[in-house]
Image (tube, rainbow, N blue to C red; front, side):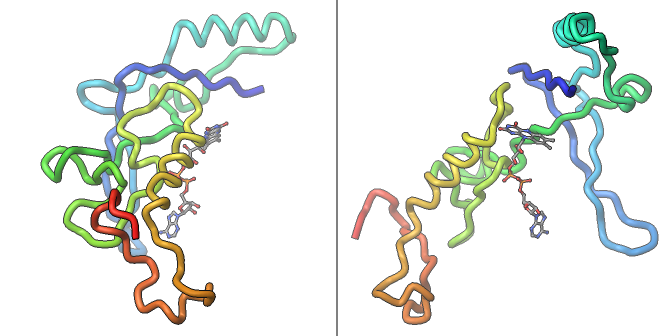
Length: 162
Ligand SMILES: Cc1cc2nc3c(=O)[nH]c(=O)nc-3n(C[C@H](O)[C@H](O)[C@H](O)COP(=O)(O)OP(=O)(O)OC[C@H]3O[C@@H](n4cnc5c(N)ncnc54)[C@H](O)[C@@H]3O)c2cc1C
């Protein structure tokens, strides 16, 4: 049985590109954030897991990386291309459009400014649907898009409807 501990604390992970030795190119690696690292031990989680183990006859344990390497694990990574008022404060606007680019949207967890402290998949889906609501449908009956020279052009002003 796997238990997932979630908190709304302001913790972070640093992503770094690292050059591959043999094949060339880069791979993305992580390391603890200097100022607000993710904890590898959470007392409330430890108590909950111990209680569960006691009642099921199991053994409470952390991941090997956390227990022996002091390296935290997360499956909820956010904030790589966050929302902001302008290019000085974020990567995308409130419609998930990338500042300075046309027809480019960020429709995944990167757009979420922070970890909500709860399961995020539905929020990510809702954000993507919100952005998609500004993509005009294909014109005419031809759903292949062949008759539309630019079928994915995003409206410059999302509040103006045709
Ligand atoms: C084990 C586990 C359990 C989880 N359980 C839950 C849960 O119960 N509830 C919940 O709400 N959330 C859960 N999550 C978190 C949730 O799955 C993620 O937050 C969410 O899927 C992130 O969505 P995303 O669209 O940003 O990225 P992803 O869902 O990771 O989608 C990224 C996509 O991009 C593709 N891709 C990557 N690189 C390239 C490339 N170069 N070219 C083309 N395609 C590429 C990948 O194949 C993938 O399909 C869980 C995560 C994990 C790992």
